[in-house]
Image 1 (tube, rainbow, N blue to C red):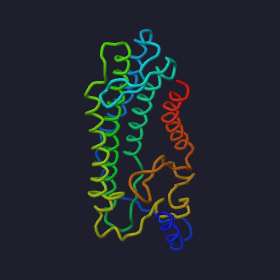
Image 2 (image 1 turned 60 degrees about the vertical axis):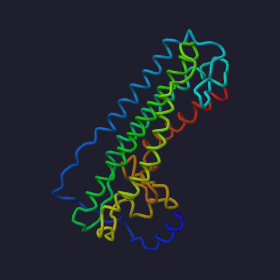
Image 3 (image 1 turned 90 degrees about the horizontal axis):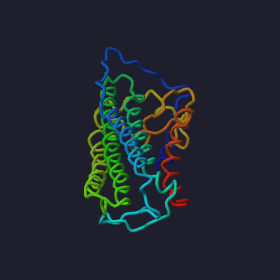
Image 4 (image 1 turned 90 degrees about the vertical axis):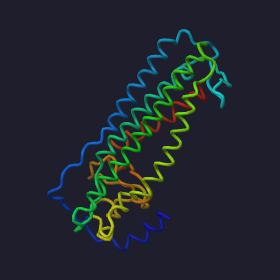
Length: 272
């Protein structure tokens, strides 16, 4: 659907770069503390999980539990190795810092404005950006709490102070699923992509930045603009933000995060 829409829009593009606008007299939106809280909590919780594992590494048995069933009791064991010991606390740090960092970057992402709309698109974008970064921050806080609980409890189960994961881990996991699904639907219904549902009649005014420039979008899905310093830009279709693939820093950060998130569990499975 996105590809068909992109092909249909290309003949409508004007030659040359899109028009630009400057917002005068506006006030900077109040900073959202949630993304910074999520980043700080992610780093602190990840380091705590690593420190807790390090403090008890000599007590860990061989083999050690690596999987837990619905009751929280271990149901799979593997030989003790670097991967079985350190994959989960390292993943806690990577996910916490990565998701919190993305929430911070999105809270400062470029806004998609329209011409001659008397500031309606600016207000809508500010509210959408705050909601999107706050949503990612809350998701980051819950996922970090879940990973931290799981990492610490896995060590405790292995050294036998307890026999299963605590019920709090299941509660936090269930709450995380509710927030991810419910938050996505709520933002889509209340704000629309980029705050479009808040713009009203001004939505008919033409966009002015990278979203309007077909030459910057590959297949209508991937934003590639070497002249744009933005790390994240609003998705052209769908919900949320995407990486500027023309910015080497954005690409390096994105690839490093993906490789770590996928590589740690994969390494634990293959080499643990």
